[in-house]
Length: 465
Image (cartoon, rainbow, N blue to C red):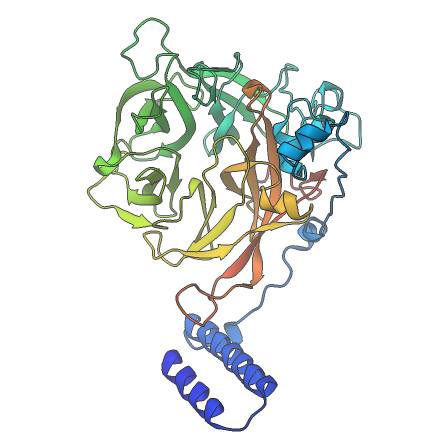
């Protein structure tokens, strides 16, 4: 109906002597009316139920303030010879060049040293519960947390948060000349917390294999992006992860189980889900207890999504291809008010790139791209997801529409020194980008990830469960 109405309006205006400004404003008015109509229809025709959430929980308003960055690129050290400049004119250095240069004069901006580390056991009063994106984050024993590419599980029985991730506390090297930077598999690290800030090291809950080179977890292989969910029916904690060889040709998922959140986890096997190659992946458990796997496939050109079996140990025959041809990876799913959202990154190896937010009314799609969710910093910060790559989005219970966006700031020169970027993610306010396939705007709200050099959860909201 919307397309027919729009065509009639265009034909009428094009056949009249209206000025261009009248034509434009008439179309704008039509689109606004159509958007309001779609909102009312989405709410079952109840006009009183239509709300524009321009602000969220009052405790989170300070986190919605836009914080800017003004980083000046220093002049290059030394002068280039006239001959060299003539043969190959030097292009302007960008912030991302400085980020990737381990000898950059701005290195301390992206990777602050140990003097500024977040240390929950050395509380200095006003710094309690503050998150500092990009700083070294120490556990309760004073060691840097090793939980990269990971996710958070809240365990109802112990009322404890568990943070699982890649334990990368080993030397960085290249398996061959053109190979990507890597660290041998050490295992999956696990940390526990009551407040999402002070984390206790629970040890390596899934360990690498030292001797058997044919085993998936042999140290020469790849283990990335482990995620853990709990199955109420079986009483098992189930871990899924990306399993690969050093050349990234195996492209599979691995599954492990445990009776306890702190392990040890028993590795079962690996497989290519639905018969497709699988690289960056995540697991999402819906409100009804059904769990889903989402993974990059077809050489990272698209994502696949499908439900797991009731025991969470395998995929079913159901699978849907989404974001076809968009070359997205690092999916992180979450849900709010019945709408499914996802943050993804581009495919640029260890280098940061632009995040995109996506939304769908059904988890199986269709999925629509909403645009870049990053707010604040500066243009380069937003185009590089604050020099990080997303891995998980964690809901803050009691704060509707509020989440923590969890990302890794990879350090390809020394992967064990990669940092964590935790930032507030807010769902709310009208979307500011039309649908790709139509003239209308989506009925779901926009997603915003706000940059802050320093932030904390609202007062009195520690240990939100």
